[in-house]
Image 1: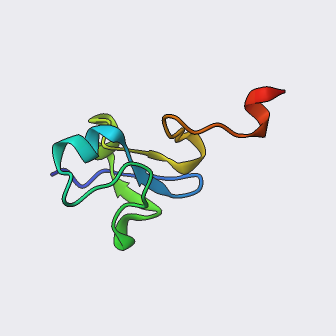
Image 2: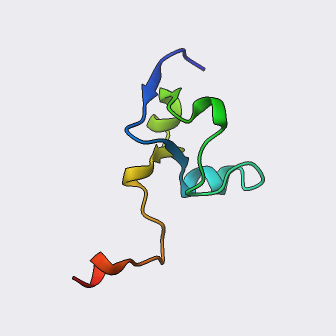
Length: 68
């Protein structure tokens, strides 16, 4: 793993891809490990394993703005 990190606008959460790769350790939409909440390895972002919470959209969930 490289030492490059990326900083989240809000916090990093796991993606569906991360959950598919390791379902026992990651759940899509849940915050990444506590020591990586704000600054995490760039590799994880590049590989699609995490995304900023502000950009995460759970599948099958709607909110009021979907109807406006």
